[in-house]
Image (tube, rainbow, N blue to C red; front, side, top):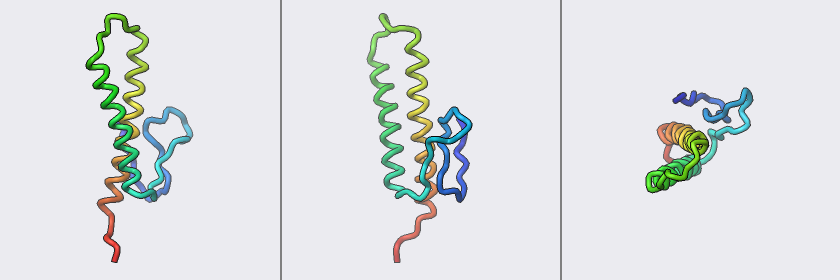
Length: 98
């Protein structure tokens, strides 16, 4: 799993991108609470999908569904992880208002 390169740049590309350009980015100047909430939404969606899969019977499943499911899980967890890294960096450097 690639590690998000944190820098002073305002916009960081998501690691889940598969293109040369970065159409999806994280605004590093966003409120850490908003970054955290976006991360939680994606990680919770991935966890919910995994729980659903755990409870399903795959007798009638199509083998082509497996790459679709794993790709969706990858996108959700990678984006969530990237968002958490930026939120964590912002919170560690956070200064209480005077």
